[in-house]
Amino acid sequence: MTRRVIASPSLVRAAVVVLAFAAASCAHSPPRQQRGVPVESRPTPPQPSPEPSSTEHPTTETPAPPPKVESAMTPQQRKESIARVVADSTAASAAVKKCAKRKLLPDQESVFDTVQSLLAQTRAALGRSELWNAESLARKARQLAGSLDCP
Image 1 (spheres, helix red, strand yellow):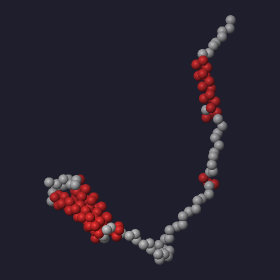
Image 2 (cartoon, rainbow, N blue to C red):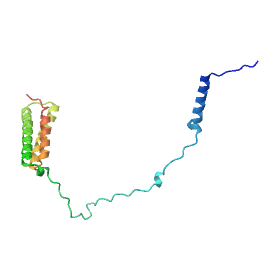
Image 3 (cartoon, helix red, strand yellow):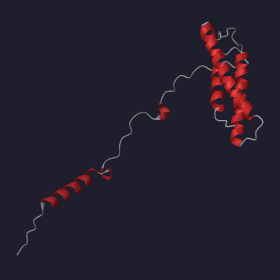
Image 4 (spheres, rainbow, N blue to C red):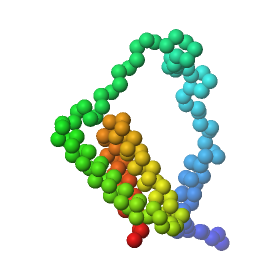
């Protein structure tokens, strides 16, 4: 008597999937061909011209400096900008004076020194007529001085 084995449909599907993966796997496929051109055989792109060194003869043309921002300001805008610098510098200076003779923590000392430096830079920028820079520095000094907590 011979026995007949009938395979279930799910077993047949599983066998087909396993055979499909085995047939499509990388081990059975031929090696891939390289595409493109090797780096060594590529042409070299044109290089930028070198900057003239200090030993070469410099050109006599010097670029014109950009116009100052203050020259584009109206007298009213200039007046308002100076008022903001004065207000910010005064507030920062007042905070620094409060803390000047106090014993400060290391963090406070760092803030104190930075505010003083910003105020000095503000005065220097005003001396160079860099109103936009002075305004920015004074604003930073005031913001930082607000973190100084000296009664």
